[in-house]
Image (tube, rainbow, N blue to C red; front, side, top):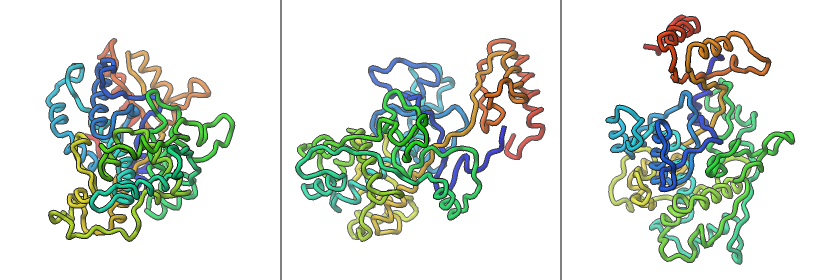
Length: 423
């Protein structure tokens, strides 16, 4: 197996490297969801928790290999679902389909992605367009419609993805050099949060690749228009609730886009990423001169708390108004734009594709065949010798004592000396 670098797990510029399968989707638990067992019951319950917080949708499976967890994100997850995780810790086994077991790595991985999506939409609706007292009237609605590219006399906007240079090799190298992340690994960065939201095209059944922002270089390779989310539509009455008296304030419009009608929020992000140009997320940001006056605070905000939106298990219980959010975590700045930039950067992430192999160990014979492949190619197309990550799943049902000896012998031969971090 080839050596790895920090690039394969984290860079300061692009955040943690998350590994998920875009073509394998986890449903939330609903009345229509078939009862699952083992790992999938835990995944579906965890996705239900995420749905209560961020809106129900299918979410991609987190790859069965080493996962990158960020402590500050794990802290947010444990605050939000404290009782659920406490209950999980009391369960001895996960095979009981009636037990509500939360899966922390799945929650923490999707938490980063969903918090970034939430931050983008909140920045545009509440911090950029909405008023200081959460105003959202005809003027704000007209501004939002115009910024999305809509005309006054139409109810529909046809949105198309535009080319971006975020993952151009030269640009990536310049960014990494500016932050001191100079060691490039063998993981391929398939998507970075600077380009918006990666789940919009996945639906219920997933898709073969993550969103792309450059035309295909060959006829048989995917390009920027090869996935369903490359084109979408925004309906003014549906998404911006122009005729609904039930939706009140900028925070209400935000909740509708972000959680209640999530395809609206997804398409808004696609539109604003395109409006931001070749790089960056400028179309989401408040104007540079917008400031929050400290005299508006009901209480003195803590300067030690990082910018964040409410930590609640259900979005319906949250107060997303500008005044409430700034009272909770304004920090030392009065600039709404600077605060929002910190907020979005806090949840930056990368989706990486890492050469890896998942093997189900069933018996000594299958183990010996697998270990032999690492030493010599069985056929010309075998690439297992070049992987960076290997996951050995314990499914042994025959001769467990012999299997144990074989595994220990292979590990001792492969890694004769313990690493510093091993017990």
